Image (cartoon, rainbow, N blue to C red; front, side, top):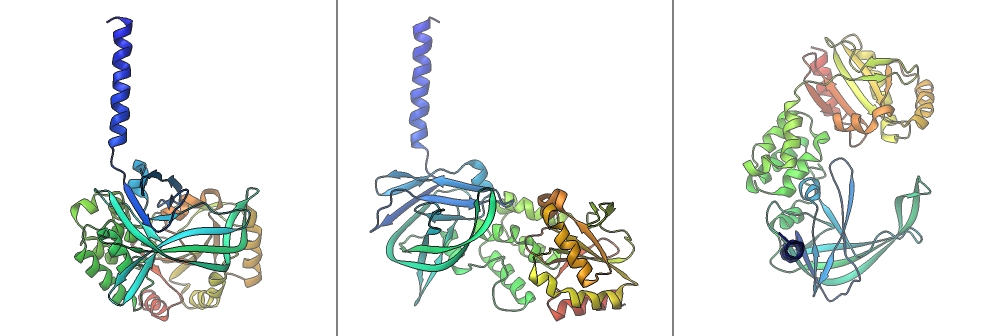
Length: 384
């Protein structure tokens, strides 16, 4: 093949590839009426806290968004904004989508891509609301600081047709978060019913996968999970739930003692019941549990071991140990500072206090020791 022909073929292939790339359907297509923006951005965070920012491409009256494969697979939700956070004036700019349901209008700041088809959102500008005196946590000079600023929200009303998964999100905005009114069992019943009604919803299965720390027993998660479609179970979020369900027994890990630094297993006496509490020096709700924990320790220490695991950083360990001295805590205290993210992910620690109750056979439950019902259950089991 001569030089000219070879390079002509290469040029032809480049033209073909370029043309094909322009014909790829956007993952999310957004059309906003009665307002003009210079830019439009999608913000997201995956299940491990990795952040992503995607800029839209203006195409006529619409904005096209092309998501990386990792975002399509692992991002549970996306927030839409006309611009990034203003780090000088501390102003956030957000877009909120409203949906008219009967006599009410329900709103959400979030949307998500669906399992297969492009998501098409068509909405009309309604009004703008400014919320002053808002607290934001930002990074400045490589340090996390809290600042006070304003939140500017542009409200839009969705036009038909509205993507099915977005309608489900609007109808059940707290799915998986346990913010609904009712007892724990009532909410589990609700989630199982909703999952059975919408087995293919990516929003619903991601809501379970990203809030596993809220469930007291694995059987509650399994009951909801079994209602999802095979395709949903095979998704990234489905596999995260499967990993959670398959880990029947507590995974015993070695962590350093918070004072001496000596490495120790979290559970030293597997034949006992064990109560593991994830806490921190700066966590006020954690401190409020101390009187209840002291009573539990006094009543049940012959049959159950209690262990603190602090998620304080290395710079904060001194504060933690001072708190332990001040409160005269009689049980062990371990530190997760060396592998903080790994430990939090392993034990589904999304918020604290996070309490795990481990039976002698390794079966693990999540307890809320602010609830009398859970304390009563603990005493009934250990005091048999």
